[in-house]
Image 1 (spheres, rainbow, N blue to C red):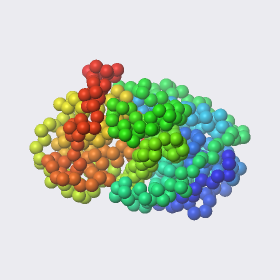
Image 2: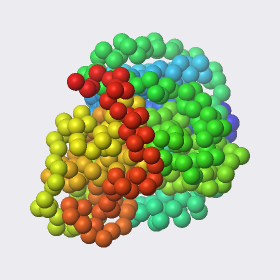
Image 3: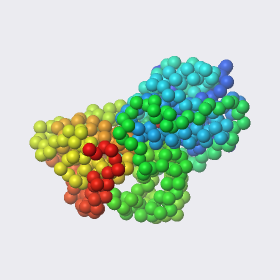
Image 4: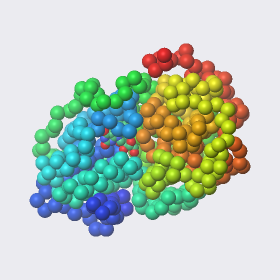
Length: 472
Ligand code: FO1
């Protein structure tokens, strides 16, 4: 591996009392005989700063480096659809790790922290590295592991181009407050990755797991079936990105908000599971021969919006509920709690696309059918749930449940933040007051009609096209 050192501003020491940025070089337990990388959010081998940090330390200490992935039988509202996509990607990563001489251990365990602690003990880990994730469930896993690990424990931000803990130490108010920080620091952090070359480890390699066997052991909803629209894994992600750059990037700036046009990158499922790094995508987009406003527009979504979402979840533990909204939004939504609702639907009516609105139903069907709703429609979709439920709390809970159940890229800071934007005005400004919404930005079907061919979108995602067992 080349001598490129992982930027220390990505590396934070995890102790039972919390996180401290790495000052010197990582410590190592004196009788340790290997380094462990606990892979979780960034499910890829190449272009992974957490694995690179672990490998760097293993070379320095002249010990083996090994990877462990701890699969939980239940993860938030994930179903067969997401577990199937994720596990195929991990199986590809395991094979790649073994071809590079890095043992990749895969364990199914309902208590991931316990699994990592006992693994680290068994292999005499001198240090454990893991990747960054601001979700509460992951922070809990790490806090539990930090209490029991007998060796130094580090978190490396392999997901963000500019490390989330470094770029800001507080909840940013909106894109315009984090954007200058991103652009100031980008030249230092948007750098090429060193590639991992084959290790000469003499370690034995664990048996590679079979996806279908593992899927039988997770207890998730099986009626939300895998999609055929996205091929899992890192190599598929790279191919898809290349196709987007060659065929679609040029018109991204003027066609991205038309859900019929198909000019978005659709990279979010692979970005969510970490099959590809946002930094890899940004490097390729930046060097593409294309229209500047398309490149700039895409990088704004890929970097500023995503870093803003990680920032929101990292510093606002109520990212998934009403208390995370700004006070102006809470006050305004409170003031309209008793407004009359012309339509009210249950979670199940939303889930089965049984509202009065063919446009909303089409968006729900797109998500069920393909595993990914177009970005522009997600705003309309979430805002209508606010309009057609009794309370903002219920609206947010239903939007999160549906998003996390059917979207491949659900269960992600981007999703929680997008729903908080739509329903609670997070990172948005106050708009003129109206019933139910208060000062939360309003959207309606006429607004959509002025942007794209609504009839065509509805026809594309009509019930006749269902290949899905979900619709009675
Ligand atoms: N991360 C894990 O370390 N172990 C898991 O078993 C696991 C399951 C899982 C299922 C669906 C999904 O969308 C994500 C899942 N993740 C799992 C977490 C994922 O790697 C990401 O860390 C977060 O979802 C995004 O922050």
